[in-house]
Amino acid sequence: MNFLSLLDRISSVDAPSDAAPRRDLLRQLGQAGARAAVAALPLALGTPAQAAPANNSFDAVVLLLKLEDLLMDFYTKALAAPVLTNAAQAAVRLDFVRLQQQQQGHARFLRDTLSFAGVTPPPAPSFDFSGRRNNPANPVLFPNVLTDYTAFLQLAQQLEDASASIYLGQLAFLTTDKPLFDAVLRMQLVEARHASHVRTLRRSATPATAVKSWPSTADTAPTAAVLVPSTSSSGATPTSIYTFEANERQISTGTTVVPFPTILTGVNAVQSRAFAEAFDEPLPTLQATALLSIFG
Amino acid sequence: MSDTTRPTGPERLSPAPPLYAPIKRRSFFLYAGATAGATALVLAGCDDDSDTTPNSGLVNVGISSANDFGVLNYAYALEQLEAAFYTQLKDGDYYKSLAASSAEKQILDDLHYHEVAHRDFFRAALSSNAIKNLEPDFATIDFGVRTGATGGKLGVLDAAKAFEDLGVAAYNGAGRYIQSPLNLVLAGKIVSVEARHASLIRDLLAEATFVGDDVVQVTTGGPIVAGGPVSATPTGLERSKSPTEVVAIANTFLKAGSKLDVSGLV
View (cartoon, one colour):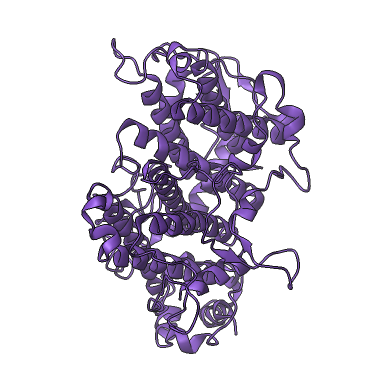
């Protein structure tokens, strides 16, 4: 069952002629009747246990909440672990305190948005950043991320880049709800600032890693890569999140692709990798969901 | 609309949730009504969406009611300004003093490439609906120094920071004027990179200043959505600027005859 359609049905009881606008999460805020009815339903009972997220504003907010919970937990654990309590990282510790606080602010905003719409927000899952999914028998995918600063930064960069991309992917489902779109875009931008800063830290760390402040084909690829399902076919090998960022085709209208190689010539000539660098790319819902489930 | 609280109607509805300062719920529903009314006025006064208004000497970016040309021209204008800035920067003494292998030179090259790509993306997308090429006025920027220019001028990194932060806040405040889902996502893809630029330039100027309370609700709260509920506590949301607030700044970097009129974005 799609939870949002349940909301629609409930809200349509008191205003059957005006059900369509209620599809928008924030516009449900004034629906006291719907709120009271739905508030009684815990989220876990309202949706099938492992329902694949549908592409709508409600599922978008739930997905983004899990993302923010993940980032907040990552920094909370790192701040309490050797990787950031070590004297060698004293100079950057405050940066991560700040990141953690902002992820916390975002998670709180998304929880309040759900509560405000009459939905009991899901609790944060128990995250495991080793990639073992809380099972010691599973292989470690991301070794030493809470003890080794280089390993930590490498995962932090991928999570922040993925965060910016997951937000971009979900914005597409909020386009009919401008107030919510507005707020979510403003969180996306902070994620992009974070990602840029973590990349800057990687350049200045010892040992330094050659990465730009935006995903680039010139970047040193991660040695412990966060992998997501490929879009090419169901049996294909999982792929790095940066596969999506290599896109050089930008559509202006309909199916028209802006011909950068043709128009950016002469004094406007740019390095060809800049076509891809100049645009951050969305991570589709399927890949976003798979990425989050690696950790919790 | 600006980042300030929009006047609301007389109705008081049920209490706001804990994060939000008390608001009048009605403000959410004012969007549709207020926009429809204002649109009618603009339509009556302007029937062409990308003309230079001869009397004022301003470049009217167009209107936001009928299609996205107005708001795309607004973005195009800002990208023209940014691209022109980095183009002129590369002719300046500070840039020329940088060693070819220096990180800062490579960063400034990349920023130039990205902004040129953004500008030409909009030019191609708008095609015959595009506003004219704007003439910048960078008299207040000293292209010879990195930062701390004398005579009230901006050094190149100070100016870069101003332009990048302005671009982010502008896209942020423009989302509500975009109608096409394709364009909304496209704006997100571009502004995300602008935010990366802003973060980087800020870190170049002073390490770990990638977010400041002037651009993100870090230590103080603010509107959750423009004209909507206000959070008393920090939310970690990027701050936004309305088109009117943005052009008040952007126009100081544009020559007479190239200054922008955004009154059609409502």
